[in-house]
Amino acid sequence: VSQSRYTLGLIYCGFMPHGTETSRYSGKDQNLQKIARDETIKMLYTSRFSDGYIVENGGAAADIRWSCRHAADPNGNLVALFASGEDIHTTISCMIRNAALGTNYTLENLPKAVRTSDKDVTLGRMHRRSVRAIAQKFGLIPYIFDSIREARRFGRKSVATDAQEKLYDDIHKAVAAWDDRFPEFGEWHKRVEHFVRKHGFTVSLLGYRDWE
Image (cartoon, rainbow, N blue to C red; front, top):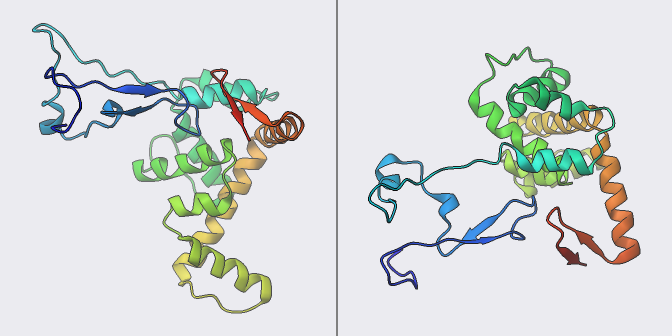
C-alpha cells in the first residue's frame, strides 16, 4: 500500500471484467477484493467520509447462475437447487459425495472444510477443468497424479502412497458423479468448442470477445 501510485491518502481498486476464467471481476492496484479476513487488518481500511461505511457485496454464486443460463440447464437441476433456498455448495457436496463415495452427509453435518474443497469440483467442471487440474486443488500434484495414471495404464506400481491412490480414485468418482448429475454443462462445452472452431473466438458473459 505504501508503494501505491496514489498520493491523496486514498486507496483505489481497478476492476477488470476480463481478468478471470470464471467471468468474475478481478482487481489490481490495490485488489480490494482480497482484504485479509483478520479483523485487525480489516480495521485499517476506512471510508474517506466521517460517517461513511465500507460495504461488502457478494455475488451470491453469480458465476454459477450465469453458467446455468448459458448451459440451458434443460432439466432444471441447478436451477431447482437455487430455488430451494439451501446453500448451493453444501447441497451439491452432499449429493456428489453420497452418490460417489457412499457417505451419508446432510446439510447439517457436512464439515465446512469438505464443502470448501468440493467447490473446486463444481467450479472446475463448470469451467471445463480436467480431473488432473481439479486434483491439484485437493493437493494431488501433477507428478503423483501422472504416476498413478501411467502405472495403471501399463500395469506397474506408482510412486504414490496408499492415501494418494485413494484420493485419486475418490476425485475421479466425484467428478464422474458431478458429470452424471449435471450433463447439460458437458453439452454446453461442446457447443462452445464448436463455435470457437467455426468463428475463432468466444464471447464472455459480459460480451467481450476472446480471440483464440
